Structure formats: C-alpha cells, structure tokens
Length: 379
Image (cartoon, rainbow, N blue to C red):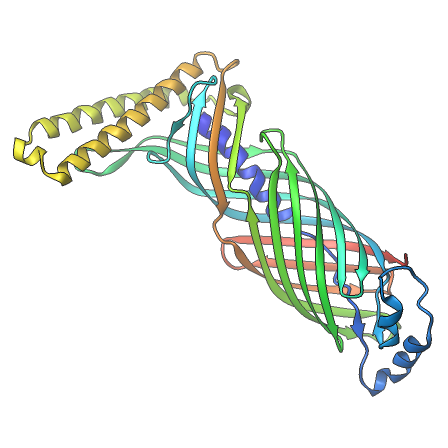
C-alpha cells in the first residue's frame, strides 16, 4: 500500500524529467557562409544593415559573413519518454507515525517510468553564439513498478513474503529555462544545450528539479530554394535529477485493495514462521557456535530484517482497517538507471520562419522521441 504511494512519487518525477524537461528546440544557429558558391551571399550579408535589435553584436556578425537566424522564435513539441529508474533509501510510515527504513527488506524489480506531453518553448538569440529559452510543459507521466518484501531464513536465503505491483498515472506541469552556446562553421555546427526545470506534481511535497545536458554535432544541406535546407545531427543526452523525494498520500488514492488483505495476512504468517525457524536454528547451536562472528552476524541480520518486515506488515494491516482515512508518509532516493543515452535527429527548414524537427534517443535504458514545429521572427 505504502509502496504503491512511494512509487507514485518516484516515478512521476523521473518520466517527466526525461520527456517534458527535454528542451525540444529547433536546430537553428549562426552559420558562417564559406566557399566560392556562396561568395555573392557573403558579400550581400557584409553590405546589408542588420535590421534587428537582437542578437547583440548582430551587425558585427553579419559583417563577418555570418548568416544569422531570426532572433526570436516559439516552438511547440510533442515528447515521449520511457526509462528505467533505480530506487533506494526507502522509508515509510502510516498515519504520521515515525517512518521505518525499509531499504534492507524491499526489493524493486523492473521499475519503468513513461511520459508523454506537450512542450512550448519561446527563445531568443541574446548573442550570435548564445540562445536562451523558456520551457512550459504539460505531461502525463506514469510508472509501472514491481516490488516485494524479503526476509532471510535460517540458511541465510532471502525469501519473498509479499509481492506487489503498481501502475500510477499523474498530471504534471513543468516550468524552466535553458541556454545553448552554439558554434556554426561552414554549414556545420556544434551546440551544447543545457536546461533547468521544475515539475509540479500534486503527490510531491515540492517540485521535482532536473538538469539536462545535450551536446549535439550536425551539418545542414542546402536545397535549391532560398533558405531551404535539411539538417542532421548526432549527440548525447544526460539527465540529472534531485535524488530525494518526500511526501504524504491518502491510502485510498493509491492502493489497489483487491486481494491485498489476504496477501498481507499471508505475509505476516510467513514472517512469524521464519522467525520461529531462525530462533530454532540459533538455539540449536552450541555456545562456541553462537560466539562465531559469522553466525552472530547472520542471526542479527535475520532478526533485524524480520523485525522491520513484521512491523511494516502489521502497520499496513492496521491501515487497511480504515483505508478511507489512512495516510502514508514516505522518503526515498531515485535516479535514472543510465545517466546518458545517444541521440540522432533531423530538421527540415522550409524557410527562415518555419521549420519542423524530429529527434530520437536510444541506447542504455532510456528512449525518447521529440517532434516539433517552430516559427521564427525578427526582434
């Protein structure tokens, strides 16, 4: 019951960070035109008066042969992400009683977060080499987690006494900002995108923070029509999130009660039977064997785990007696299973105003897709 709540919070930060926090920007940059075939364009850029206030030093950049994008833009992007997460340092309590550390007895298996949503991204070129932007996103993250309570027997083998699974879905709002230092050289470019976001989710005590770093290396290929091109790029994606998560939830809002009482009762019986077996093993040892450090450590570990598991199951059993008013408090750390994954992308620029892009992230335990439309204008 409580684990389900916990997982709820856990996941809601992760998926959303992986997807909505993604900047979802169109790849535009200050491109320095080179080569004989671009000689006329370079001459016209150098001779023309730069008409916009931004970027700062825009006139100097065009005088040196840089073909600047329009200085302001707004993009709308669809984002999807799926990632494995790792949960640790789990503490749980019920009805505002002291929380117990369950790290030793809880095992998480196949914890997967998934999210999809829409991102709006306004941006400006502050300098010819620096783009800054804002992020406004709405997402629908979900988490599918399998977990169980395990205790050691008299032989030191850890056995499952209660298995559960949880599928939690949430709504999240994300706000943030970012900056992208960019270098364009002869039709190619390098961009070092980084952004900072805060995601508000009702189940969390405070917004979930995430930092994303995405280096990209690419090249554009001009088409016959003026200002029309196709760009392709490769790069990396690194996600870092705040590891600590705390909160409080109503048991009735997060718990699937179907058959749970029976499984909890069986779990309580298994813990009691295991404690009897462990005590029988210990009492059957000689004094010399009981003083053996290995046996002493084994006995202490078994008693500690059985006490923790038994207390948790009994507290859960009490909460189930009044699930409509019971609450669960939790504290945990979570992180992506893999910090990095690989990305490839492409963009079609119809003209300097309109462009569409698609990007796919893969490798490791995370996948993501971004597809978007951007409109740019002079400012």
